[in-house]
Image 1 (cartoon, one colour):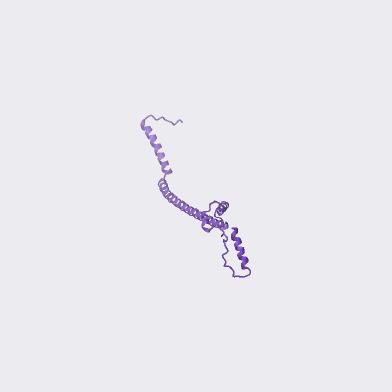
Image 2 (cartoon, one colour; image 1 turned 60 degrees about the horizontal axis):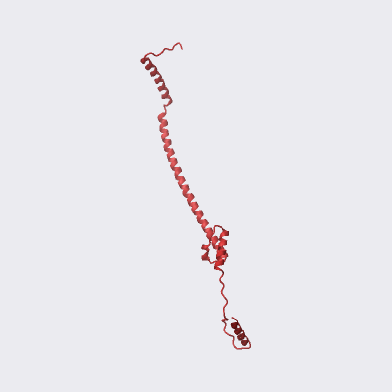
Length: 158
């Protein structure tokens, strides 16, 4: 520290600062010599990243479209299976095919319960027996008198 001399003038100060600035410029020049190359490579990479992000977004949109199509097809399949189930249950309960669409429910048990209620309202239609014997009378004979007597008795009972 014996070599230290204080700076007393502006010129000495400028000379000392100039020397320090030159040393720093040399250091920076060496340190950042490839700055232009790094800047160009950075621009290339930013362009590449932009292109890759566009590709990713396009792929995501395409995947969403595929997922939507898959969901639509699964919903359609579920609708067909439900319609098939309703038709089967309607026929099992003796309901006409046209009434199968009127059955409601989310699962097989609820559809069966609805079909049973609807079948109770619709009911099985049975044809009533005829009121009178529509067969022509059998000619005269030993049994003709008895049949005539029996028919007259049946009609009086009504």
